[in-house]
Length: 115
Image 1: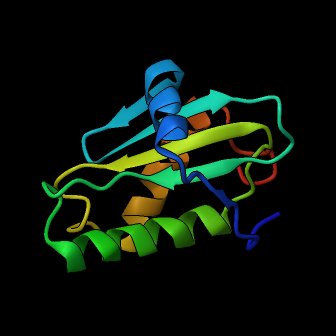
Image 2 (image 1 turned 120 degrees about the horizontal axis):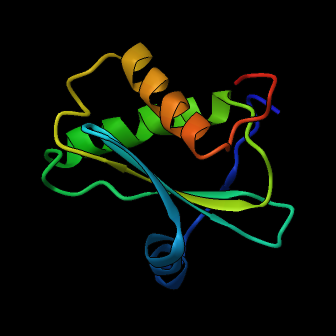
């Protein structure tokens, strides 16, 4: 359902498990790592390193990504970690959205409605 806020991935152990066992879709500005779960709920986490920029820049990138994730219709039953790369702050919202959608399609994470 677009507009619905997905659950957050919070614990370090959950992030580590997704990063170790998950499938990856890469772009020079962004990486998506997804791990299928037995749960009906999908969770999303963001890992923005200091290489992306200072605190203000990192928070802006996270806000944009949260808005993009909220606006898409995701399949259920997976954990997702989004890792922006240096330069992700310099692209427009529309470009960032198309990169996220492109990577999500590679991993088959979007429902057919928005894909």
